[in-house]
Every structure is written in structure tokens, then in C-alpha cells.
Image 1 (cartoon, helix red, strand yellow):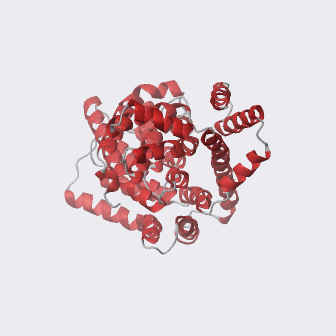
Image 2: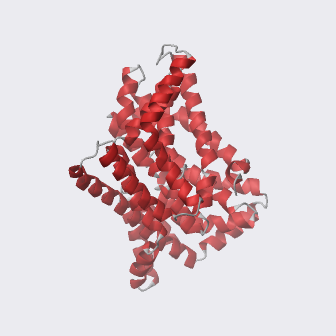
Image 3: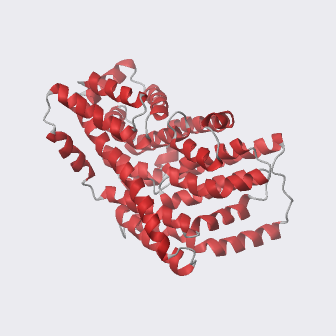
Length: 423
């Protein structure tokens, strides 16, 4: 049955059937061939979605959309511009820093890419950035939405691998900052070599004044991650309750304080959030039955035996896993890959003595890079849509950022302290 399951899934993907539907169809086909009662399909899907922790996903999606429409995203961009906009290649660095700010509130990579890209790509073009380079920066930095807390992929991984969501959130902080700084370094070097985005020098007093004004304007926006993460780690509320608090806070700030969010806008925002959440949860549901069928056929056990027979060295194991995850991330949606692979790979990693939180961070970072690799990288399509580009136009400048992201994966993999510093 395993071969039917995997081959069926590959064939459905090859003929451009959406990932969620491909997972469902291939599972249905395998169950039909094996004679498994089809009622199990419905039961497994509904049981996988019957989780209090999963309720955080639609609320974080809604919070991100409310922030984008309520003026919070623009204020974060203004603050980032005040901090790093004065350096050569400053606007590119503004994109990365804005993404880091926004990621600590939305939890969604694609939402982060859309929110920052729609604001910054036109501005970068006016400063002399090639449009494809501007889109590549936006897509590459958008992956931070999956790495910095509160991250939707981390919530799904924690449920799939039975680890602490809060610990996994902490594990993403240093890798997220490291990736952000390395992307800013690439932009700065490229700007100096090519010669775009020349800026006027300013004094330290001018810079301090600009940052102070932008910080005062964005203070309420910056309080959101403090409230969310502080509440979680302070034990005041769970991750799901934190997501609800984020929605309420975004509503109060957007409608009552900034007054850039009208009540009439809410119906459209709720509708878009519902569609996005439904897509995510459908993937979660069908990926769960897919993973269940793999487990029933002892695929995790067989894979674990194979990996230990190849090498008993944890460094070799991690190298093989990273290579496999990178290739899988190119052709499979991130959440589906997490649900299918986490129950298979996490026990194998534990066998090699690898910290479960560290391994979770490795898997999240690697699959997040998959969001900016063709052919199914969701951030690429979002950036192309915002910049009005074809995918092939984005590939050349993207290679530079992908190289840096791969180096970061290796660094995070082989320096566990980067993810276990608070564990």
C-alpha cells in the first residue's frame, strides 16, 4: 500500500492537483486498494483537527490581516526605515527588518511577504533596485514568518512531534535573527557592488531623532509581540489564547487608536482570513490521514532502521535529513511536509541523541527555505504577484539569497546552542 500511496501522491502533484487534494486522493486510493474501511478517512481527518492548539492558526491568520489593514504594518516599515534606511542598500535592509518585526505578530510567511512586499517593492524600484531583485529580497525574507515566533508551522510541528510549542518558539528566535542579519549583509554588499540605492549621510543626532519619532509612532505595534510572547512565557495564557489576544489587540489598535481600520472593512478581512485558514486546515487534515497510513505500514520504523544502517554518526544523519528536507521542500507544501515527516524523522533523531527541540528548529528552518524554492515556493508566487513578474524572472537574483539561506541551515544544524540556548 505504501507504494500506491506515494506514487499516487506524486502523480496527482505532477498533474497540478493542489497539495491538499492530492493527499486526500492518494490516501483514498490506497485505502480502497487495501480494503480499509473508508469511514477511517473521515474519522482521522476530524480527529486531527479536533485540537485546542490548532485553533491558534485561524486567529493568528486573522491577526495578521487586521494588522496589515489597520496601519500596524506601515508603522513597522517606517520604524525599520528609520533604523537602517540610512545605510547603502538601506531599503533592502528595511524589507528584511520590517519582515522580522511583522513576523513576530502574524505567524504566516505568505501574509508577511504580501504585507511588506506590497508596500516596499514599488519604493525599492524608485530607488533604482531592479524589480526582480526587490522581489527576491521580499520572498527570501518572508520565510522568517515561519521561523520567528509565533509561527504557524511551529505550532503544527509541535502537535505532530509532541513537543512544547513555547520551547519551539524560543528555538526560532536566534535562527530568525541570524538569517535576517545575513540577508541584510547580502543586500548591503550587492548595493555597494552594483551601485544602487545611494543615500545621503546623516549625523548620529539626526538618526537618533528619526528612530525616536518612528519608535513613538510604532510603539503600540511593537507592544503586540511583547504581549503575545510575554503572556505565553509568563504563563498567563496558552498559545491559542495568545492568538485571540492578538486579534483583540489588533482590532483595538486598528479601529480605536490608529483609526485606519473601518468596521465596514472587517467583513472582507474575516472572509480572506477564513479562506486562508480553511486551506491550511484542509492540508492539516488530509496530511494527517496520509501520515497515519504511512505509520500503519511501518514506514517510520523501516526508515529509522535504514538510516541507522547507513551511519551511526548523528552529523551524517543530520546532513542526510537536511538534503532530503531541502528536496522535499521544493515540491511539497510546508505544513503537509511537517505533518507527514515529523512523526517519521523525530523518533529517528531521538535515536541519534539529537535534542527534539533542536531537530524541530532544523526541520522548520529547512522547510521554510522551501517556501522560496521553485516549483511550489509559496513566497515566490506571492512576490511575483505583487511585483507583476514571471517566476523565471526572479530566479537569477534569488540564487544569491538561497546560497546564504543554505549556509544558515548548516550553521543552525551543527551549532545546537543557537536553538537550545533557553531549553
